[in-house]
Length: 398
Image (tube, rainbow, N blue to C red; front, side, top):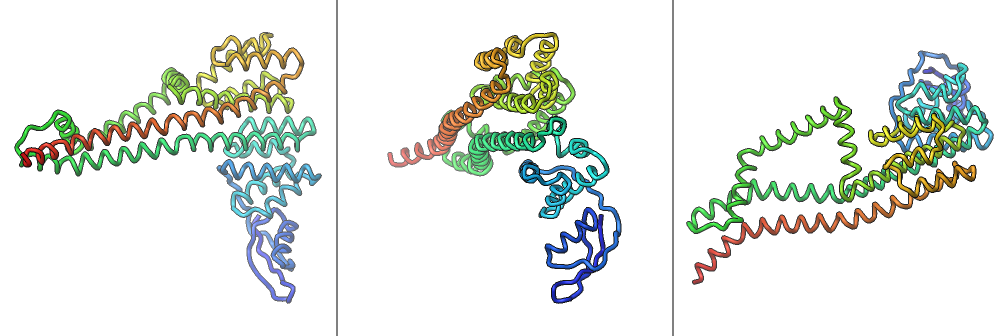
């Protein structure tokens, strides 16, 4: 709600203004933090809290602070009011404010979060609902924050693994384009005046430069058309999407790492949901929706059907080639000892360590490979450019 207010400072000076607050008590609290005493206030209009999206870091911070306040025994509405009053950004104020208003109207925290589907995923809402039912909301929030932090670190690792290759590819592309469009045409003019035989590698370089100079626009247009066609086919046909996702998992060097990352996200989410009391079949269904890889989605769908028909989770996963034998063995041990949640946690820990090592190995392999490729490409270009010049100088000396 937007309020117009009159307030006084300790010296007795009157201040006027407008401020957004949940209610008049919240308005008094905000003015008190500003060193002002509320004299008079009236509501102007209701503030529409349209929180469309927040970053992962903002969501982690919000849930972490909410968990700390609830763990300290602060009531949920008081905790949301405190978070709203201490927020620095508009989304940081609107999100707890909107949740506060919906809870004040009789909704649960899970129901209030469901009003913001772009902020809170269906999996997160289901976990919050399970925490409210079991009376362990603070513990569930702690597990959610841990999982989101781990996913954020995983995304950061992926970015770090791709930054160097991306930078090298940009440098190579820019260098080649500059040489083909600017340097090689000047070489052609120079060699024309020399009137001598041109080596094969130089003729190939001149022909390639001609393609860049005369048909560069067509090459760029063709690449764009191919990309747009691939995107359209992937969006329109599930079979194409399935083959693309299968190719991602089978790609040399990077494929196994991408597969481990997809399985790691799935196992971590499954462990989190099972540990908070969500039934196994429901947890598998939510993990299936959460996965972005169609190959993993179909494998989870078939595994869930087997579980519904009475098969143990380990046997259901064993029927799919996607899951490693180590995962199957750990699940069997967990099922036989009645500690499936601990087994899932151990698998998640195993994947976290394995991904760290795999990303390090990929970086160690990609960096020298790209360096060698760049050196060979630029070496060939310089040989083709300098070779005729060197031959000409040698002829002049003779």
